[in-house]
Image 1 (cartoon, rainbow over the protein chains, first blue to last red):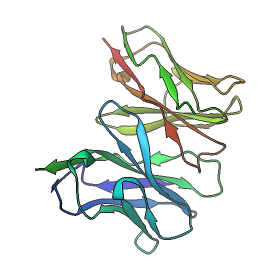
Image 2 (cartoon, one colour):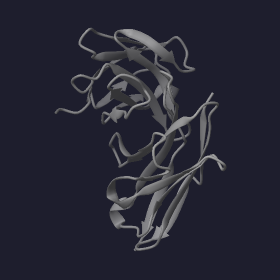
Image 3 (spheres, chains in turn yellow, brown):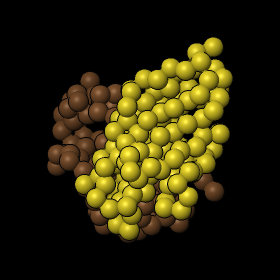
Length: 114
Length: 113
């Protein structure tokens, strides 16, 4: 069965600094991997997804993530944080070629310091 | 194209009551999944419906049930409500399988008092 671990339930970065949100996954078969963002009182919005094409995936709002099979990681980065990036971020995994559910990590709340 | 619509947005119920939440997926989407989101547990998968059949189920008690209609709209029912059922319930729709992108509604905030 697949699982997702997000390191750090809260992360604070200064405006303009690098954003790095960590995600490690466990899957018995090649995975699909996702990053979603949730703003207050909203549903989740897809930032980016990995589906076995390129290992470096670019998403919306300047975010990107790199799939590293050897490290079973899919960390999310953004070179320069904006105040509008303050939100909760969820990493998720689904097993490729199976009609299976998407499993979410517990989320990381990103705080942007002025 | 309209997004995923969940109704109602907010709900207050008393312990012991039952509740029904509704989700209208994006037109053409056949898969609907439900999640419970709480501060302590994060996002927990409840179940997924595809073409009116429950295809996947999470680890929730039988008080939580759902169904999907022929137009892909889905309802989730919780019977004998407990205080711990207070949560944001999110519905997500996707084209065919969960391996594709899931589009989420804004959720129904359920408060049990």
